[in-house]
Length: 66
Image (tube, rainbow, N blue to C red):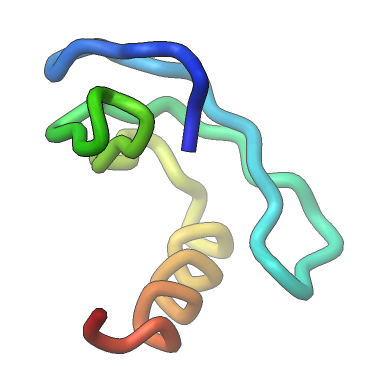
């Protein structure tokens, strides 16, 4: 979630922490879509490490539909 608007196609440098994690994830991401007037972004991660990819995959899988 963001207070700034980023257009689809924009490349961002992200740093974030997943709930329950102790390490900060740093990566580059491509904005693929946006909702709520740009406040919510859908991104494609471009350079996650293997470990971070597993963490993000597990987190997304745990969220379930809806």
